[in-house]
Length: 110
Length: 163
Image (cartoon, rainbow over all chains, first blue to last red; front, side, top):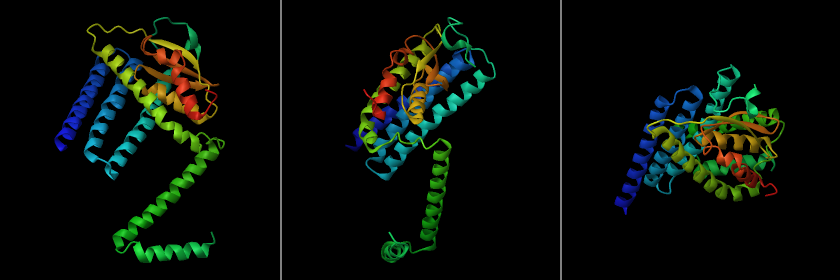
């Protein structure tokens, strides 16, 4: 039983780690600020989420798992707030968005 | 409850199962202080927001599991799609900006929707104004769930709207 749980944890930790690396690669490969924020959010959601989920399997039904759930909840509130603050500040200060079809929809909005 | 009864009950609890060592007393006192501080902070924030904290009625908690499932599935799908975009040999993005309605009634619901969009990789909320979100997306597939309104409905359902 313990062995099976350890395997589940290991798989989740490795998968989470891979998504963190993918986020890092995207951060590097994408060419512009706004696109890079998308790559960073892969690390924030899939990377951190899978790793915390993997740790929960080690915690079992305990206070440790409750705390891990709370960490995940706080992360899922704070990371979009931070990402939004970043892009809104950049947009508000006039950093241009590279768009496929400029001039459509909300482009004029400040 | 009258203060005298409260004090009596507290005294009984403290003598039977309360803190014994200095260390335990410190934890209790610091705990009470921080609970009071956070409660004051919450009241102040609630007042600043115009008392608009009716989002989480008791029934919202019952609908939370279904929302979390929809949320997890959409975030997972968006992560896989964005991973594909990152790892393709020739990066091929079609970034776009779009205004979408946020039909939630409470400001908390709208913020939740905006955060939901930002959390799904491939889409990010640039602005929230006049019940409308300004959403920036990497390509057409990334923004599909935003454009067809299914994420909007997920949050609406949690809020207890007409859906």
